[in-house]
Amino acid sequence: MAITFENVGIAVSDLEATISFFTDLGLEVVGRDTVRGEWTDTAVGLDGNHAKIAMLQTPDGQGRLELFEYIHPEAITSNPTLPNEIGMHRVAFSVDDLDEALAIAARHGCHPLRGVATYRDLYKLTYLRGPSGILVMLAEKLTAE
Image (cartoon, rainbow, N blue to C red; front, side, top):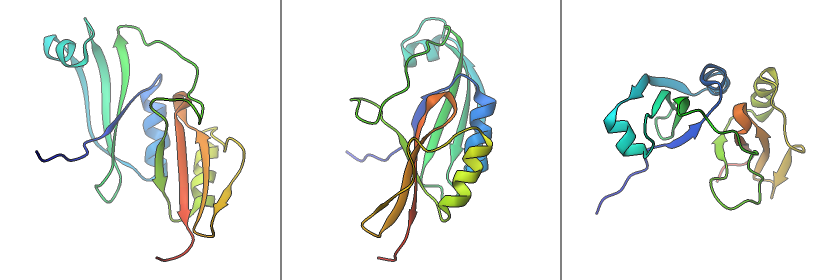
């Protein structure tokens, strides 16, 4: 059986703000839609499923995020995921300039949870809270392999 990675789906409270955050970081919107009907009720497992969706892609075409804002049923707010919780954890991106990426994130009110760390002189990295409490890791490679 062949398998390829498709995307990571994230429910958000404000689709436009979340799109703005990720496109400012460099992702590209490759599709938008509003979905509803029997097919989506069946696929997602929610009766009356109705959502606005956007597909974003990294410039290299290798990574995709599917963002969705529920119209119905009403979205359920939960506590943001902590770094040590079991389950869906975070989305991570490599950037060529971490300081620039953090300045972009700050314009969206998003800041590192604690600060920027260096891993074995290979990467500078940090976790931050993006829109809707999404845990985002940003990493800048420091050395060539």
